[in-house]
Image (cartoon, rainbow, N blue to C red; front, side, top):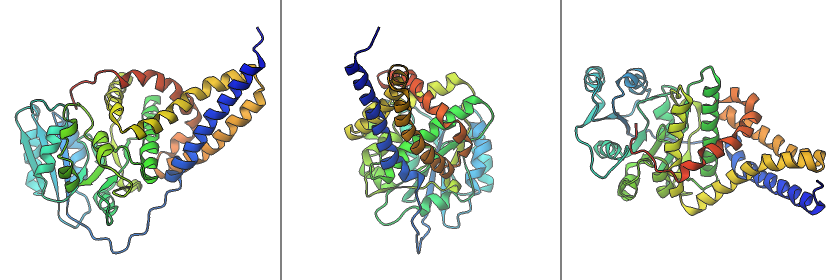
Length: 374
């Protein structure tokens, strides 16, 4: 069956449109992270910092990761507020042992569940309210700082008017395809939220590596507006309070945190479903911008295949090649910035894989999320 010329022209123009939208995102947004240079800061003063960590039945993870937080090279006063949220394992005794050597470890023990407040928000709120200092630095029990200068770097990002610092929460480099998939998805997510923040449109952060002023938390009445949702203690909270003027990023590899990636595909899928269930509550402008990016990428490869088969294949490849060259440069620079350079040789495969990724996780937008945070 011969396809009418008008249809062929429309399909080619649609391909050009999808590529054009993608190129716009790479040049206007993602290049900002790829070519980001930290501003020179003079007369930086170290301020007291409260690190807040919540843990529920995570004694094994705390044994491995907590020492990396406790031995940070930070000369100024700081404390580690560790919220033991109704743990039934050895967490209580582990904290007592650590307290013998580290007096700045401040335990907050919760023995009852909060009614009508689901997820991690209640224990995190208790940790922040128990903190002594204005600068709050958040991470998780399954995270370890990538260096002993984590606190120093994250705190050093604060300047006049800045109330929020977005960091990068990476995953340990391990062998296997699943590890690379998890790390690429994490990189791509960071490419979006860090680039958008640099462009003056911050829309989320990750609780594995996030800092904000206590005043922001109090001014927003904590998590009161999202208490009914299982998630959102990091991304939705930042979506509500972050602005062009009060938010910055810290991407120095010394300021990263590292987490253990899921060991099974099913475990990772469950985790991602929980995370994506909050995106439908983002501000409309953020949903539109993220939706346009996702839809243009989702449409790109079916349109490319159609044009390669039924239209002028070399013109289709030429149009796609423009995006590919720009994408390769941005990915190379951005992956280098975030210490994910080993993923670069596979970026095209991962990019094609995003088409199936969007199909797989689309139901998370309307599916009812689980009411647990661990």
